[in-house]
Length: 129
Figure 1 (cartoon, helix red, strand yellow):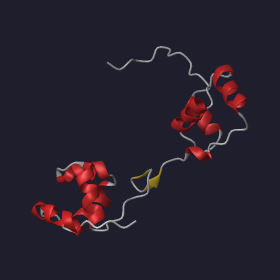
Figure 2: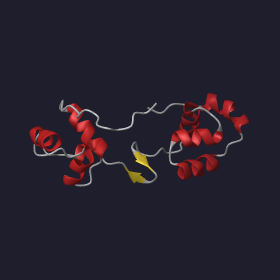
Figure 3: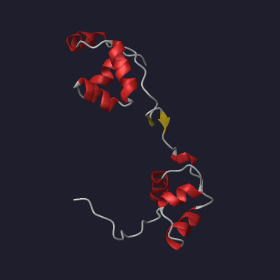
């Protein structure tokens, strides 16, 4: 599904961007949001420009050149095991993640939400104002 962006090229001419500028800044800054902020435009305008000039985007979830941990890699034996570690042994989500390899706290949190494992009540943590 190839779209024709020729009708938008005229709109981008006053921006004085070159494909090389956009590509180099996107490679340096790594995200659409940061790159758009650098050029002073909304993210959707940058996206249209990149599509119009066939500038390849990074894979989703790829930040600073490294892939984010994939929640699909978190494969504990069963839900009851995670519930036991979290509630009975009182391990933190980060500790559970370390026990199962290179898994972040966020991956464990998502797994718990999907499997209806409630979080413990907050104890002495600072609340954000």
